[in-house]
Length: 335
Image (cartoon, rainbow, N blue to C red; front, side, top):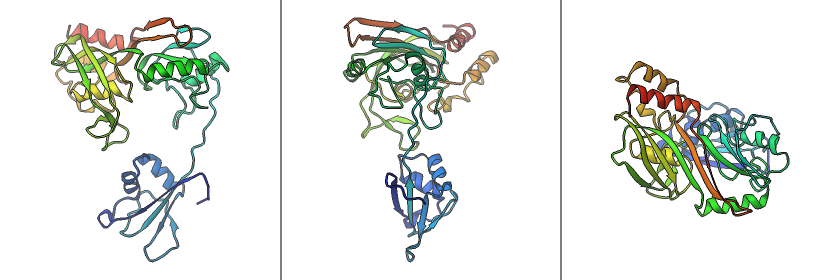
């Protein structure tokens, strides 16, 4: 391994009850901040050394499937991530509002907000750099100029970005005080018993799957979601309005799933529902199968302008794919 003074190092001693575990499985269970895929890549890149209890001379292990032995000491080195500077990339943006201080866009599903591992370019940030030039706030850092809040890749709808630091600070304070009006449309499985309700539960990392969030009893961050039924399609699915008091990662997706009504199409939180379409019309089953994302859209965004103090509110209809799915439910099940 090449020495790097900025690298993080982890040392783990294999316990007796961990004998014969795969190396990548053991490390992913011990290091919650690293995904198993990331750990496997580090192993294959030669970033793991293993020392026997009676031998100080470590050996590099590059097989993720290596079976560990009790008493072995595992040294894992994690090099610092290289932070690439995003470049302008011209892309079509659906601009809802723009002035010299901020820009509001209707983000399409499938567009990542900012560069990250696995999505180095063709993000909203790249598009904003091309559209706004150098007039984006720098508070978000080199990879997130202008970004005040985020939407998941496959969630469509309204977002605001700041063009300078004063606007960024003002918008960030509004978000921190929960003085932002945010309303989403979501198509969820089943029909909630209540016509409207309030969901309150701390959201934190799922202890069994680091890619997921969950309602947790210890730790996490407070989260509150209000929902109202808009249109029910029998007991199969319901279109709901969701209003956020807070803005946690995957908040609506987690909260609705915690009620037993996950968002239709959600790859993380509605897997158990995928096989429950056998009794539906074939056209509806096909429409559901062809909808390759969560049916969630940020439909309303309201806030006080951070510079001139105007009260602004914006609306955006769900995109064509979600509207087509809703029409199928209306035609084949009815409201």
